[in-house]
Length: 431
Image (cartoon, rainbow, N blue to C red; front, side, top):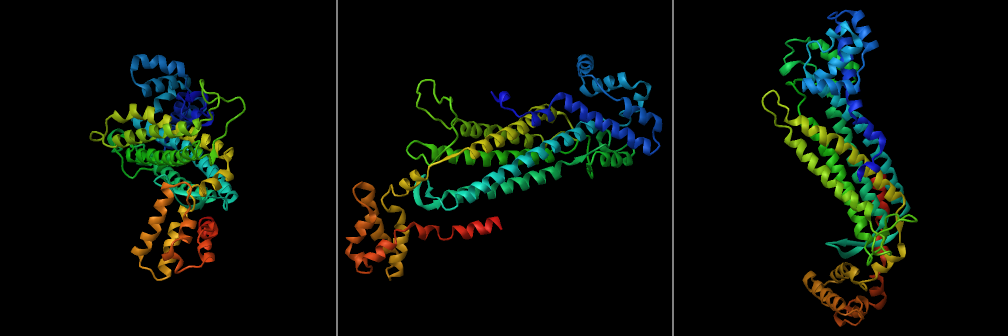
């Protein structure tokens, strides 16, 4: 199901072909570094850079015998390079190449996700400004609370996705490290200067200390950032799904001409995109858990992390890219129904102004407990009888009218009171 939606730019980063291309880039950079330090002939390094290549089908053929992808990869390179291939991988261990290449792949994937998140935050910001003054009911526990605006909802998500952007940018810093320190990380068979020069060529930083692998807390932090991004997307998707319910219908995800919502019920317009996003967020969280499990390896390394990462890293990046792209399309085409929002505001017949009345009674000198009792008593009557409204009951309440004029009671039921600081919130967030 996902494959027909997967966007090619992220998928391309995680192909097997690209994986070996990046590994080749690491091997060639190491040869350049060794040549610069006069550890291998300069002519050989030039020849390696010129001829180094591989054939994927040949790697597969060699791996059937070697049972080791890196040695099969090196044999394929040697087919292209010739005798100078003896200098390729000199003093390196497989993880030097695998982990450094993986950092490059992850960084490229993060660059794309950072761009996605920046663009998505811009969409949210535009919607926030557009609907800044569109009133709707705010809910707590799913029950009507007090008025808010649709713009405030979008502003909240805009602010949250700015934090997601910071997390992704920080994850990029954390993963932009490599290691060329040899078996168990002691540089026994490779000069530490080779590592520094190689990683500078690749625009990576040198891990201050490593074992045979780059430490997996780095990868776990990346996957955690993706999981949180997915959680924010799920949060937004869940909000839309709730607001799209038939009895609410304040917003609705796009529904194109010819689209069907049900094979049985022709009338259905279901929030399938948001449901898909909410479901996929669970996969990102599960993958994040697996990444944390990868942190604890035996001694200087084992390879329990390797098989896991070959699943969770491509899947998580492709899923996150798909999810944020899908949600961007939903938000761009979102149907908004201000009339329904206004109907819902008045659906509880003034109950949403109960705190305003409570505070006004306290300002008139009543003790809080006494004021609360008066307002709650009348509010409960409105809950039970659909023919009643809170304002009329208060106008008939002697204990209330002893302190208020009719005009004062009327003034307690204005929407403007609740929305008077919306502009202040916007200014604070958008400054």
